[in-house]
Length: 157
Image 1: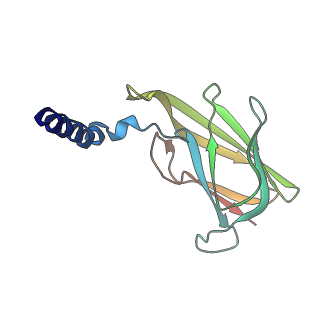
Image 2 (image 1 turned 90 degrees about the horizontal axis):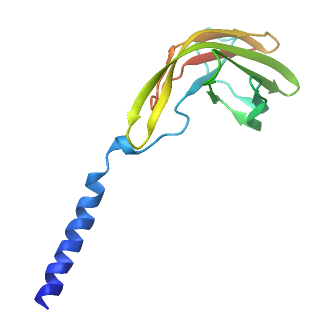
Image 3 (image 1 turned 30 degrees about the vertical axis):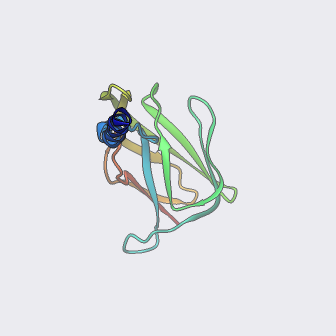
């Protein structure tokens, strides 16, 4: 009986210490290389959030990838290319299409032994067509792993 109590104490102590051994670095995050964008009214004198309804977004280069499909959204997470220095997206807003070109540089960054390496990006510039997009402003140029900043503001008509 005494051995059972000792065994039970050891098991409880190990279970209690197990969560403490995990660190924040061991949690590998998704969207670690995504430009975070928000939509704003181009007709307002102050930044006023707005939404796109029934809209789709897809990447163009190097291949056509659907990012959002017929959704309503106020913000977007757009993954940048690891291979190219320009990433292109098309926003389809109720059959009106605008194209965004992100020119960016990248630098490899070590995250942890569990998560490995990723790229941190710097947005150099953004070009866009003007069908329903009025203007684009880069708010935070750096797109870093695990940071939650709105990088780009997209003003729409």
